Amino acid sequence: QVQLVESGGGLVQAGGSLKLSCAASSGTFSGYVMGWFRQAPGKEREFVAAIGWSGSLSTYADSAKGRFTISRDNAKRAVYLQMNSLKPEDTAVYYCARGRKVYGSLGATEYEYNYWGQGTQVTVSS
Image 1: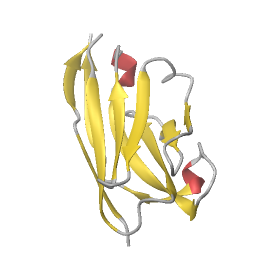
Image 2: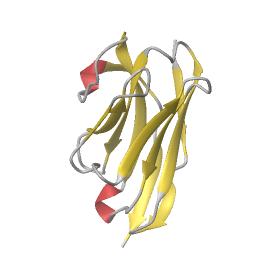
Image 3: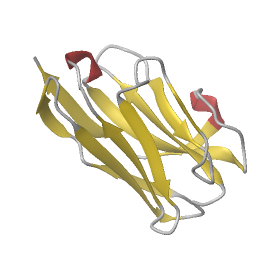
Image 4: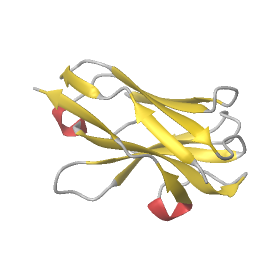
């Protein structure tokens, strides 16, 4: 069983920055793609970013490109999401997730992830 715990959310003004962290407290971490998703009130959960098992590959949603950076530290069993130039529309609960397949390819759909954290709230005020 894999347990993922997000942290780092909070309230920030538009234009500000936040860095989210996700720690894997149990289960296998290295060798799996890790992703960040978010869900705004009244909307479906959507893909934000994903990083490959080695950390050398990553992919982003169009809304995140140029503003967000995903990274990971396999030794610390952690994945991060640095968010800059935040906008009110970035307000959401942010979830990290572990890929379904070992050494799998980067995925942008929920189906490709089978372990999820509980989420951390990010609120961007205008």
